[in-house]
Image 1 (cartoon, rainbow, N blue to C red):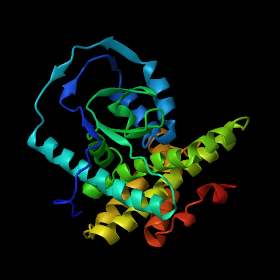
Image 2: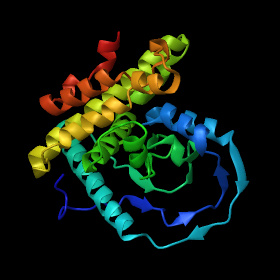
Image 3: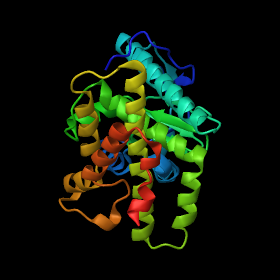
Length: 285
């Protein structure tokens, strides 16, 4: 992905040089992998992530600070550029539709973090918290994505994940997330899960839509980039995760969509470039 030389966002709080401070969340070993698998791309489920993880909090750890490595500095510059690209694209889309855009913040952290949705560890994967309108990301997730889930490496996998979480912010601004929560009330678990899947697939569509617009504005794509995004989407499908976790697939328990669905909706956003084509809720009924 071509990114060097473009604007970098100021809406990034880089906490990777800090560790400890507050309670340490238990996220290592098998438990950590389970939480990571179940909560990948947490989206609106960020609130539930916090509640679940808070139940496993350990003892307070002292705060330590360190200098970022050259690799971490470069990662930070890359992520700031990605966030700026998302800000620019969605500002344009909102203006075209006579809407007011409000940019989210992004927190980069290592280990654990406190949010308006509760405490979370790196094991939860990247997620968006609607309570504070912040995207939270531990960059170590992308190594997990490659080594444990078999996704292709590459910088555009990071771009896809961030654009997906940014999509959840768009859903908050448009009121889609709140409508989904109200629609889930009184529903069976299976029916409520279908609505959760629709929300996640729409965030995948928004990630594809962002890719379409950003390519037109910045000619950012390089050979293999779209394949990296689709590989990441394939790796975090509910069916792929359940096969790896339990050896069988239980569709009624899906909350994020199958690998095929996630790839389809990303591609639909990318190829159409039309926000009107992203009503995943209509197609879920």
